[in-house]
Image 1 (cartoon, rainbow, N blue to C red):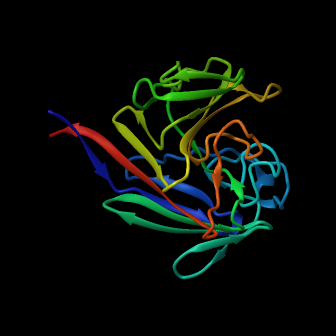
Image 2 (tube, helix red, strand yellow):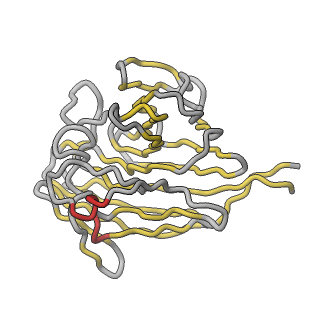
Length: 259
Protein backbone atom coordinates (compact mmCIF):
# COMPACT_ATOMS: atom_id res chain seq x y z
CA UNK A 1 0.00 0.00 0.00
CA UNK A 2 1.31 3.44 -0.97
CA UNK A 3 1.46 5.95 1.89
CA UNK A 4 2.72 9.52 2.19
CA UNK A 5 4.75 10.39 5.27
CA UNK A 6 6.39 13.55 6.57
CA UNK A 7 10.18 13.69 6.38
CA UNK A 8 12.38 16.20 8.26
CA UNK A 9 12.94 19.47 6.42
CA UNK A 10 15.89 21.79 7.08
CA UNK A 11 16.31 25.47 6.23
CA UNK A 12 19.31 27.77 6.01
CA UNK A 13 19.08 31.56 5.77
CA UNK A 14 21.49 34.42 5.15
CA UNK A 15 20.26 37.27 7.31
CA UNK A 16 23.07 39.57 6.22
CA UNK A 17 21.88 39.13 2.63
CA UNK A 18 18.30 40.27 2.96
CA UNK A 19 17.05 37.44 5.16
CA UNK A 20 17.30 35.20 2.11
CA UNK A 21 16.59 31.48 2.46
CA UNK A 22 19.51 29.70 0.80
CA UNK A 23 18.50 26.09 1.41
CA UNK A 24 15.33 24.10 1.97
CA UNK A 25 16.27 20.45 1.96
CA UNK A 26 15.49 16.96 3.12
CA UNK A 27 17.84 13.97 3.21
CA UNK A 28 16.58 13.23 -0.31
CA UNK A 29 16.86 16.56 -2.15
CA UNK A 30 17.30 20.34 -2.22
CA UNK A 31 14.02 22.11 -3.04
CA UNK A 32 15.34 25.62 -3.75
CA UNK A 33 16.56 26.54 -7.22
CA UNK A 34 19.58 28.85 -7.61
CA UNK A 35 20.92 30.91 -10.47
CA UNK A 36 24.39 32.38 -10.87
CA UNK A 37 23.91 36.10 -10.20
CA UNK A 38 27.04 37.65 -8.66
CA UNK A 39 25.44 41.11 -8.36
CA UNK A 40 23.00 39.74 -5.75
CA UNK A 41 25.63 40.17 -3.03
CA UNK A 42 26.04 43.87 -3.92
CA UNK A 43 22.34 44.81 -3.92
CA UNK A 44 21.45 47.99 -2.03
CA UNK A 45 18.07 49.47 -1.05
CA UNK A 46 15.93 50.49 -4.04
CA UNK A 47 18.09 48.46 -6.44
CA UNK A 48 16.51 46.50 -9.27
CA UNK A 49 15.73 42.93 -8.20
CA UNK A 50 18.45 40.33 -8.79
CA UNK A 51 16.98 36.93 -9.62
CA UNK A 52 19.40 34.59 -7.86
CA UNK A 53 16.84 32.01 -6.76
CA UNK A 54 16.41 30.72 -3.23
CA UNK A 55 13.56 32.23 -1.24
CA UNK A 56 13.46 36.01 -0.93
CA UNK A 57 11.34 37.94 1.57
CA UNK A 58 9.38 40.37 -0.62
CA UNK A 59 7.55 43.14 1.27
CA UNK A 60 5.79 45.62 1.03
CA UNK A 61 5.28 44.81 -2.66
CA UNK A 62 6.51 42.52 -5.40
CA UNK A 63 5.92 44.57 -8.53
CA UNK A 64 6.02 48.33 -8.38
CA UNK A 65 8.50 50.24 -6.26
CA UNK A 66 10.77 49.27 -4.66
CA UNK A 67 11.28 46.35 -7.05
CA UNK A 68 10.34 43.19 -5.07
CA UNK A 69 10.11 45.30 -1.93
CA UNK A 70 12.38 46.88 0.67
CA UNK A 71 13.45 43.91 2.79
CA UNK A 72 15.37 41.67 0.33
CA UNK A 73 18.07 44.27 -0.35
CA UNK A 74 18.83 45.18 3.28
CA UNK A 75 20.88 43.34 5.92
CA UNK A 76 18.78 41.90 8.74
CA UNK A 77 19.71 42.15 12.41
CA UNK A 78 19.99 38.92 14.38
CA UNK A 79 19.05 38.26 18.00
CA UNK A 80 19.20 34.90 19.81
CA UNK A 81 15.54 34.23 18.93
CA UNK A 82 14.74 36.07 15.69
CA UNK A 83 15.87 38.19 12.75
CA UNK A 84 14.60 41.70 12.04
CA UNK A 85 14.83 44.24 9.24
CA UNK A 86 14.05 47.93 9.69
CA UNK A 87 12.71 49.60 6.54
CA UNK A 88 11.60 53.23 6.12
CA UNK A 89 7.89 52.53 6.71
CA UNK A 90 7.86 49.28 8.69
CA UNK A 91 9.79 46.72 10.72
CA UNK A 92 9.57 43.04 9.85
CA UNK A 93 10.66 40.28 12.21
CA UNK A 94 10.89 36.53 11.55
CA UNK A 95 11.34 33.61 13.92
CA UNK A 96 12.27 30.25 12.42
CA UNK A 97 11.51 26.96 14.11
CA UNK A 98 10.45 23.37 13.51
CA UNK A 99 7.34 21.41 14.41
CA UNK A 100 6.96 17.67 13.70
CA UNK A 101 9.61 17.87 10.99
CA UNK A 102 8.12 20.91 9.24
CA UNK A 103 9.73 24.36 8.99
CA UNK A 104 7.66 27.04 10.73
CA UNK A 105 8.31 30.75 10.22
CA UNK A 106 6.44 33.25 12.40
CA UNK A 107 6.36 36.84 11.15
CA UNK A 108 5.36 40.21 12.56
CA UNK A 109 5.15 43.46 10.63
CA UNK A 110 4.85 46.67 12.62
CA UNK A 111 3.82 49.91 10.92
CA UNK A 112 1.43 52.83 11.20
CA UNK A 113 -2.21 51.67 11.32
CA UNK A 114 -3.70 51.71 7.83
CA UNK A 115 -0.39 50.84 6.14
CA UNK A 116 -1.05 48.74 3.02
CA UNK A 117 1.35 45.99 2.03
CA UNK A 118 1.90 42.75 0.18
CA UNK A 119 4.27 40.06 1.48
CA UNK A 120 5.49 37.00 -0.39
CA UNK A 121 7.83 34.16 0.44
CA UNK A 122 9.30 34.40 -3.06
CA UNK A 123 10.38 30.75 -3.34
CA UNK A 124 11.93 29.52 -6.59
CA UNK A 125 11.88 25.74 -6.69
CA UNK A 126 14.16 23.21 -8.33
CA UNK A 127 11.63 20.79 -9.83
CA UNK A 128 11.58 18.47 -12.82
CA UNK A 129 9.46 18.82 -15.94
CA UNK A 130 7.18 16.12 -14.51
CA UNK A 131 6.31 18.15 -11.41
CA UNK A 132 2.78 19.36 -10.78
CA UNK A 133 0.81 21.56 -8.39
CA UNK A 134 -2.12 20.28 -6.36
CA UNK A 135 -4.97 22.50 -5.13
CA UNK A 136 -8.77 22.07 -4.97
CA UNK A 137 -10.35 22.06 -8.41
CA UNK A 138 -12.51 25.13 -8.91
CA UNK A 139 -10.50 27.47 -6.65
CA UNK A 140 -10.43 31.01 -8.05
CA UNK A 141 -7.17 31.96 -9.74
CA UNK A 142 -6.23 35.27 -11.33
CA UNK A 143 -3.83 34.90 -14.25
CA UNK A 144 -1.89 38.17 -14.42
CA UNK A 145 0.54 37.40 -17.25
CA UNK A 146 0.51 37.58 -20.16
CA UNK A 147 -3.16 38.71 -20.18
CA UNK A 148 -5.09 39.37 -16.93
CA UNK A 149 -8.14 37.12 -16.55
CA UNK A 150 -10.11 35.30 -13.85
CA UNK A 151 -10.12 31.49 -14.06
CA UNK A 152 -10.85 28.40 -12.00
CA UNK A 153 -8.08 26.05 -10.94
CA UNK A 154 -6.25 24.30 -12.55
CA UNK A 155 -6.59 26.50 -15.67
CA UNK A 156 -3.60 24.73 -17.22
CA UNK A 157 -1.28 25.87 -14.41
CA UNK A 158 -0.87 22.60 -12.55
CA UNK A 159 1.77 21.15 -14.88
CA UNK A 160 5.32 22.51 -14.46
CA UNK A 161 6.84 21.23 -17.68
CA UNK A 162 8.12 20.52 -20.19
CA UNK A 163 9.53 23.92 -21.15
CA UNK A 164 7.35 25.45 -23.85
CA UNK A 165 8.56 29.04 -24.14
CA UNK A 166 5.78 30.54 -22.02
CA UNK A 167 5.85 32.64 -18.85
CA UNK A 168 2.71 32.92 -16.71
CA UNK A 169 2.09 34.80 -13.48
CA UNK A 170 -0.96 33.92 -11.41
CA UNK A 171 -2.47 34.25 -7.92
CA UNK A 172 -4.43 31.39 -6.39
CA UNK A 173 -7.10 32.49 -3.91
CA UNK A 174 -6.17 30.18 -1.04
CA UNK A 175 -3.31 29.89 1.44
CA UNK A 176 -2.10 26.36 0.73
CA UNK A 177 -0.70 24.37 -2.18
CA UNK A 178 1.24 21.16 -2.70
CA UNK A 179 4.12 20.59 -5.10
CA UNK A 180 4.46 16.98 -6.29
CA UNK A 181 7.68 15.90 -8.00
CA UNK A 182 7.79 12.13 -8.37
CA UNK A 183 7.59 10.60 -4.90
CA UNK A 184 8.65 13.87 -3.25
CA UNK A 185 6.07 16.42 -2.08
CA UNK A 186 6.34 19.93 -0.64
CA UNK A 187 3.38 21.51 1.12
CA UNK A 188 3.33 25.31 1.62
CA UNK A 189 0.75 26.92 3.89
CA UNK A 190 0.33 30.53 5.03
CA UNK A 191 -2.20 31.58 7.66
CA UNK A 192 -3.06 35.03 8.99
CA UNK A 193 -6.10 36.19 10.93
CA UNK A 194 -8.15 38.97 9.33
CA UNK A 195 -5.86 39.40 6.29
CA UNK A 196 -6.17 38.05 2.72
CA UNK A 197 -3.87 35.11 1.95
CA UNK A 198 -3.01 33.55 -1.40
CA UNK A 199 -0.41 31.62 -3.36
CA UNK A 200 1.43 33.46 -6.12
CA UNK A 201 2.74 31.38 -9.03
CA UNK A 202 5.47 32.20 -11.52
CA UNK A 203 5.45 29.48 -14.18
CA UNK A 204 8.37 30.50 -16.37
CA UNK A 205 9.05 27.66 -18.81
CA UNK A 206 11.86 29.45 -20.64
CA UNK A 207 9.54 32.24 -21.70
CA UNK A 208 11.24 35.12 -19.85
CA UNK A 209 13.23 37.31 -20.24
CA UNK A 210 12.90 37.72 -23.98
CA UNK A 211 16.60 38.28 -24.66
CA UNK A 212 17.88 35.29 -22.63
CA UNK A 213 15.04 33.11 -21.31
CA UNK A 214 15.60 30.54 -18.59
CA UNK A 215 13.41 28.22 -16.53
CA UNK A 216 12.22 29.36 -13.09
CA UNK A 217 9.30 28.10 -11.05
CA UNK A 218 7.96 30.32 -8.28
CA UNK A 219 5.49 29.01 -5.68
CA UNK A 220 5.01 31.87 -3.26
CA UNK A 221 2.74 32.03 -0.18
CA UNK A 222 1.42 35.59 0.13
CA UNK A 223 -0.47 38.13 2.17
CA UNK A 224 -2.63 40.04 -0.28
CA UNK A 225 -3.99 38.96 -3.66
CA UNK A 226 -2.01 41.15 -6.02
CA UNK A 227 1.63 41.54 -6.99
CA UNK A 228 1.51 45.35 -6.54
CA UNK A 229 0.34 46.97 -3.32
CA UNK A 230 -0.71 50.05 -5.35
CA UNK A 231 -3.34 47.91 -7.10
CA UNK A 232 -6.71 49.00 -5.67
CA UNK A 233 -8.70 46.36 -7.55
CA UNK A 234 -7.48 43.44 -5.39
CA UNK A 235 -7.17 42.95 -1.62
CA UNK A 236 -3.88 43.73 0.16
CA UNK A 237 -2.90 43.38 3.81
CA UNK A 238 -3.67 46.42 5.98
CA UNK A 239 -2.11 47.13 9.38
CA UNK A 240 -4.89 47.40 12.02
CA UNK A 241 -5.17 49.81 14.94
CA UNK A 242 -2.77 47.69 17.00
CA UNK A 243 0.05 48.60 14.59
CA UNK A 244 0.96 44.93 14.09
CA UNK A 245 0.18 42.07 11.69
CA UNK A 246 1.31 38.54 12.57
CA UNK A 247 1.27 35.48 10.32
CA UNK A 248 2.73 31.99 10.02
CA UNK A 249 4.31 30.11 7.12
CA UNK A 250 4.55 26.31 7.43
CA UNK A 251 6.50 24.25 4.90
CA UNK A 252 6.27 20.46 5.09
CA UNK A 253 8.16 17.84 3.07
CA UNK A 254 6.64 14.44 2.40
CA UNK A 255 7.66 11.29 0.57
CA UNK A 256 5.58 8.50 -0.94
CA UNK A 257 6.47 4.92 -0.16
CA UNK A 258 5.18 1.44 0.46
CA UNK A 259 3.75 0.82 3.91
